[in-house]
Length: 362
Image (cartoon, rainbow, N blue to C red; front, side, top):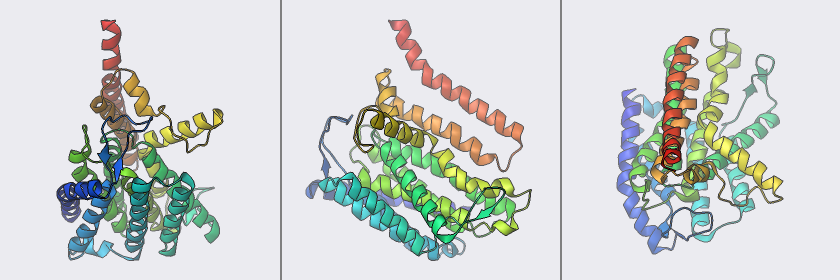
């Protein structure tokens, strides 16, 4: 645990220090976000935050490779995740600078998923009628779909200062706790790579947030949102692939099945936003990739909340779903229920307090 904490803090420190230099580079090379109709910010802001995250991750991997425990986690799958993330950062930087079309970005995301497949990062089985081993082609298709969905879920919520970085940090913390406890309690010994990648993702988000929180001095851009989405998706897929379905007993069934469901649980808020956006645009006869100002954070702000409060509300709702699901494999149901109820009560109170005060003032 100590080495993973060192890895997280190192990634955070490096990202915090590197980001101002990347900001200057983005300004110099014209990677600055203009004001669009759907945007909330009112001043042009440099992008390429994903480049700072990637540099921080690269340096972190280089340094921690010498640690006794964490160094063993940098295997073939971790190398594939790094290369796929590198590809997406380059693609995202091009989009942040030149505004690529949606089809090009989607194709690039699929290519990144293909890199994962080349390095053996893929879904091998699904919880259908117990445990069903998948044909290679089906497993590859499911893997690509999961990667595309999670990448775009993170991308869709990157519309408010500090929102995406904060939600990914919370989701990553829940997933890291699950992956680490899965290793310690149930003996799934090869869960090191998911824990390592997730710890780095949490760290770069924490290091980036001081520069990205309202009022943001730099945006992560598509280079950052696609990179973080890939990190979460690849960690979940890697963890699932490292669980031997033949070794799953009745006692271990729940913990073994959760890796596949956990990323969707910890990213429930972004995924809900993604699904609602697609349905909304299709009903209006528009492309699902068309932009609008009807995302969840837009609606929360229209209820009278500031940017900071809106981000805090979405942080809380993410945590309310993510953490109870993460501990459900390790704690009795009554403990999970009490914990979830306490989180839900506080989150509901915090979310409604502003609207009630507005009604009273009117």
